[in-house]
Image (tube, rainbow, N blue to C red; front, side, top):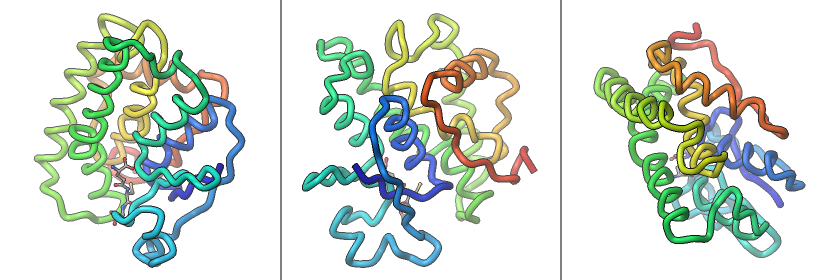
Length: 203
Ligand SMILES: N[C@@H](CCC(=O)N[C@@H](CS)C(=O)NCC(=O)O)C(=O)O
């Protein structure tokens, strides 16, 4: 399999991390976002939105980080990572929606401001990040993992942008359960870290 990625993209890291955790052989192919490679015809044929990550598995092309998590778990028959039963699957889907919603418009957006100079309302995106972190902290005070009694793709979908939230000036110190959960993920066999940048609270 080939993963088209960008090293500073948390969406791409999400897919990279899961490929590594499930022990899948893969090749990383860097798409040069700075040079606009993602908006050129060769890449747009993989993802008409012109975004990384994209997974290519033979003739199959899967754009979108959460779609890649679902594809891999299903293809590899990993019901430990993505349960088949209606309630278990619905619990995962809830967190995938949060990853595409509150995470993207909260901690990911706050980091886009500091790492890439994106023009978002800084106060608003940081405040959205804290609103979400309070919810995640509350959920993790009841159990070790977000969607089941063990790690699932829900945890992987939220990991990268929460781990690097301080780069977007989102302070994680008020969320000890979140900190412990990040550490649990970081000790999983096959864990690969998301690149760090020295901006925001990590400057
Ligand atoms: N929903 C998509 C979002 C992907 C995304 O926002 N990718 C960013 C990098 S983090 C990107 O490629 N941005 C370039 C652009 O939108 O022009 C996913 O989960 O994969």
